[in-house]
Length: 270
Image (cartoon, rainbow, N blue to C red; front, side):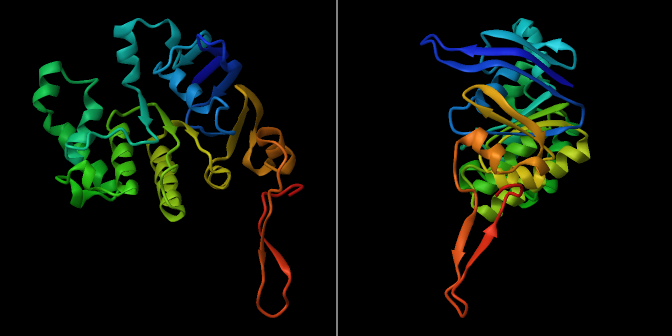
């Protein structure tokens, strides 16, 4: 379980990226974070695993206050928090297998990591994960030889080899085409369910958030302005999060009847 209480992140310039954010994520729950650019979504995710240090508040992950941990204890706590990055964060010159095994660096000693000597069981687990994400034939390929969707799948396998309790996902589809985006989101949700993980997904695509996540949290200017089910996402809610906009997409039928047809609606007042 994740319990965030009165979280604040203020930069030296005085800009407040997060303002009094409180949020609870239950065990095995998947939550989508949506909101405009600069709303604080990535900052919130990165505060949870202390990639960014909060200015104030508490972040409890499985009962441990991440904000109060020293360097050693933080390293141990991060073992159980997997992270999938927007820009993949792979080492291009390393192979797919080596990138996946890097997810175990928090468990092995320094020299074992330098020489890339991992236990046989860990290597076997990596093979299993690569097969599960559809990359069994790319084990020895360099990361820079992969497509964006393949690189993201490597990132997913790398996060899961940590055997985390919590998965943080930062814009997993930002650089992907629509079809690949859905495939990657579907894979993430399936793996989260298979491994019984709690998961927080920062995502710009409202349609994907609604399609794959039952609970959605909307951020605006560092504050939570919506926390509810995807079914209740309507025009009024979207206007609160993003500002006034026409959330229908119209397509002109140029065939026989020459009429406008709505091909997309978020429900409610849309």
